[in-house]
Image (cartoon, rainbow, N blue to C red; front, side, top):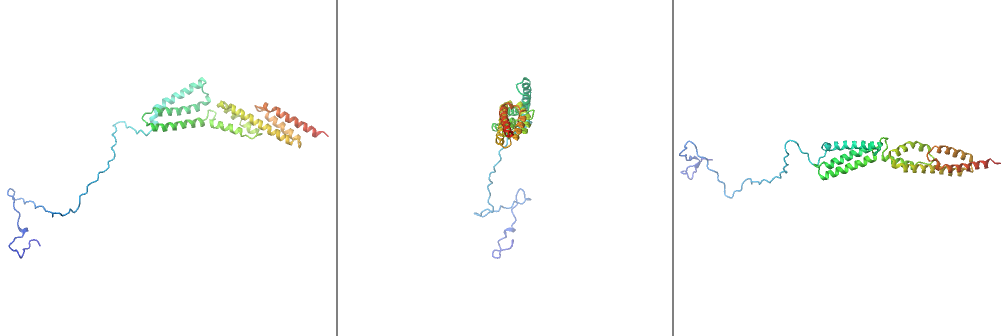
Length: 275
């Protein structure tokens, strides 16, 4: 216990009972307690930890106040509008002028304007210098792909596009011989096709003539096979076919063949009628 007298050294005063010395200039203020000395070689209870340096994020460049600058990777129609509007108006006016002069068919104005829109987009992207070169190249490829789609699938004023034109020609080439009703149903559409796309006139003409020859050749072969069995029915069938084909445009190509087949059928009927 603190303050206990040592029985072996009773004359030695206890250190805690000795009052501290007073300051001469300030006797009313007690002196500060003596510092506690640590034993030499005593390790600290907690070792100091050196803080690790933190990776600071890169500082963003300060943008000027007022009008905000958009990143270069963003391209919107609003940015291209000041360039697209004059180009679009110029292309539309140019199309009308060419149509009035007769250099562009009026039926092709819809396709012409669709291609002009793609050209306006392409020109706006080329003139938009704030966009990066790589991004502009991607947009140019997209616009060129749209132009190709417009060239194939945008219809004329009559509703015929390039894809449907090729399809009509292929359907005519695959039309079964003797189907005169289907041939006549598609006659109006083929005339519209040739009017809108004059380059298809040769293909349509060749396909119509080929179908007419296939029809007559098949009818004559069937008539020759049935001539010995029932010449009267053969003659009636050839007469009906001749009547149907006589209304078509290229009937003169097969008229002689039909007349020869009908003469053979008449001769066969006469032979049967003789006793």
